[in-house]
Amino acid sequence: MFALPINDLLFQAHSVHRENFDPNSVQVSTLLSIKTGACPEDCGYCSQSAKNDTSLEREKLLPLGEVIESAKAAKDAGSTRFCMGAAWRNPTDKNLDKVIDMIKAVQELGMETCVTLGMLEEHQAERLKEAGLDYYNHNIDTSPEFYGNVISTRTFDDRLETLKYVRDAGINVCSGGILGMGEKALDRARMLQELANQEKHPESVPINMLVQVEGTPMFGIDGIDPLDFVRTIAVARIMLPESYVRLSAGRTDMSDEMQAMCFFAGANSVFYGERLLTTDNPDSNSDAELFTRLGINMQAVSEEDSQKVCCHE
Image (cartoon, rainbow, N blue to C red; front, side, top):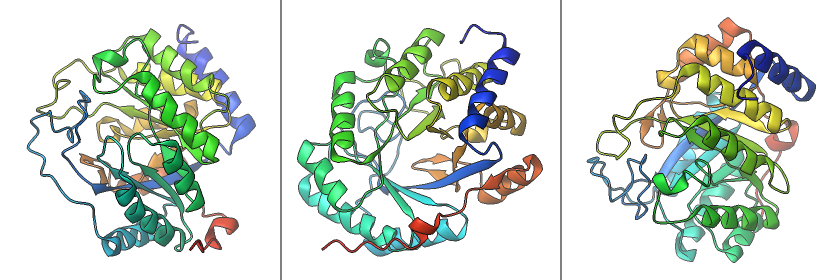
């Protein structure tokens, strides 16, 4: 599929997209960093790694009230899902208690919830399910073969183990990867193959374009060609026909025309808001203007979610 003429690939991808989704509707999520910096992992792309000299200030876990205020603002701006990310290798049970309080508070606003907390143990995934968590994000990042070039403090199989715990617990899976880290087209194909070969496809597949941060090992490498990024979105749509494919990090470096091609190729979800953890994102007004120009509507909160109130004790 990656070798197809781009017109043929886009036609095939868009046809699959129309079979499964409204082609003029985009689901909107907001991502908040609830605990920033000092992560012990050595991810070569990440500004939050304690091993990378990025001058990022370490921050403690945000207080519950601040998280609630951010979630309210996100909902007012049109987001239907509120995602919370913490820079941990894996959460302690004590930390998980605090995150569960955040999940319940956000659900009381009628929003879907998603967290990304690093690797989980089986009992932790079960606790998150009991708390009513909708989605757990755990990206596989790249192909198994290229993974060692990106991270050495955990293995690709470690990633798959957490995804299995999440799936077995009955939580929706959010898992994708990052493009532009020096990988080849074969690595992009293998990454999508790994996602497509899971027992059940991830419900949400974020595709990030590397945001190069000074002080990380990947700062200064050659970026991905825009058309190669579009190709990857198209192949993702074909291989994962019923998954939401999300344009995630890197949209500040994408032209409106490139984003429009991605939406045509099958992307139907974005992160909304000016920050994605520690990197910039287009402001909400810019996105709203682009959606208007393209005739794309933001997906509304479903009736079920608007009435959902977390009542777990």
